[in-house]
Image 1 (cartoon, one colour):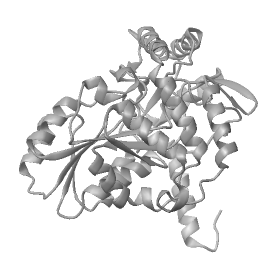
Image 2 (image 1 turned 90 degrees about the horizontal axis):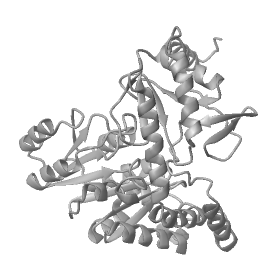
Image 3 (image 1 turned 180 degrees about the vertical axis):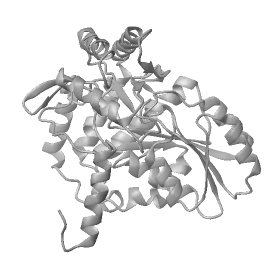
Image 4 (image 1 turned 90 degrees about the vertical axis):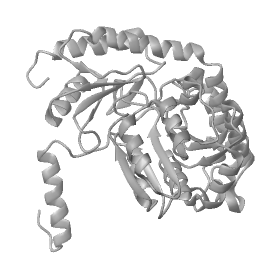
Length: 390
């Protein structure tokens, strides 16, 4: 409906265009805790679209730790970390995380997005260069743009292209930024080869391990999975995926962390996360360290899904991780198939451009899933494979 305000009319037209392209985003209200099942509009749905890979988001141990911290520290931290908001649970979490990884120091951020913005803009700027995989998360891309450094993107996992960029660069300081596990494809970055290039061309290697920490490397993440250590490495783990809480931690050499504490604006100029989140996150680290049984259950569900879709009409990307994308021909097909699964009690997210270059269902698995849950998803996918629009 037209209004006296042309700028609002233009937005309404733009939204109508998104509707026509099956690209408009809308939120769904969840009425329950995260888990293998979610309550939506009074109906239970099997959850195949969350990132709670180890099933810790509603774990009793995390609830107990958070409640105890609320009793001791209240609800809000009251200030930024550098004023008076850095409470004992924050300090304990940073130390525990660094110790768990075997790295000298760590620094907490309120979100993974803020961590990427803070780290990259603190380390590179005008006269520098940052080199990024084309399938990197949006937060890495935004950080690279905001850094004002030369921003050079290379084709996904194309080491030869990256080396050409590095060899041609005359930048004062260089930084390579990659996801360790790519959030929409589920595949792994070749971190050992990337680190070799960083060594050869005197660059930092910044690893966003949002989807690897807690799952790979016996829980210690992608650096442990690949057996890597180097002062050039900067390591990020977000806490909203396998850890089951919120926020992010960056680990590396002590001098690096001290620099970030002084220069990472997204860590300096924001109120600290509640102490309860830090306490719950520390409790989760204990469960992750002792959580091989959870990781084995997750691997079993991954194998079950991949085996069940082998030889079908569905195109399943090559992934050994909890992220199992099914490529589709159009955004319309992705939305229709997601809705058809929802009608059968299964929630699988339809991911469309511009988030990804090609539409897909992004199936995510968890240690909380039972064999019968994945069997139900497979049965529905098999049923829908021959239907129009599937």
